[in-house]
Length: 51
Image (tube, rainbow, N blue to C red; front, top):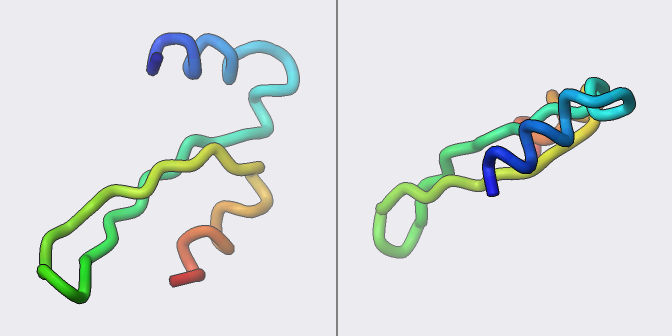
């Protein structure tokens, strides 16, 4: 799946999007999980700012 996403992002309009990965700590167990999204380049800071 990762290869497909990368190939899609490298063509034309896809260059305006970024795949972002955020590490989130669970308040219940204390374990870390990773939250992945593909967001527009203008929205990257907003993605990391929200909790």
